[in-house]
Image 1 (cartoon, rainbow, N blue to C red):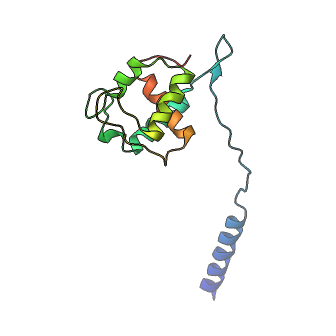
Image 2 (cartoon, rainbow, N blue to C red):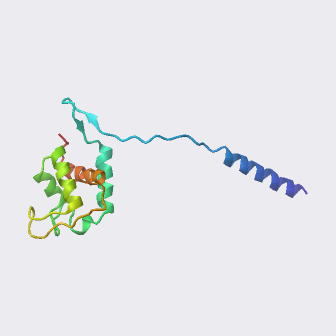
Amino acid sequence: MKTLQSICLITAFAITLAACGSKKDETVTEDYGTPDESGQAIASVDVITQGESLVKASDCKTCHHQTNKIIGPSHTEVAKKYDFTKENVALLAGKIINGGSGVWGEIPMSPHPDISQADAEKMAKYVLSLDGEKEH
């Protein structure tokens, strides 16, 4: 009888504890960076880190390496070729999504139409950051 009471008490306690869980509404906000003196937003470290994670999770490493040329140029070579501007972020994001050819040789870059524009831009920002340049 005492065992049954203990089981009932423990069960009631567990149900009460589960029912009291926090249901706090969580608002997700995007980080657009910190404005510099000119009033333009600069890429935050968070966006660069997200871009790095997206690159590492994709098939980019099949043809690109951070510092060594494989089939395509290294990501660092790309960073050195293109200034870290909003226009070049959009240009490279377009190449990630649509593919491209002719800039780095005869072998075309495969398109990645399943990558969103926002994610492609994060990936481009990561690549353009590899030479130490900040977005301007």
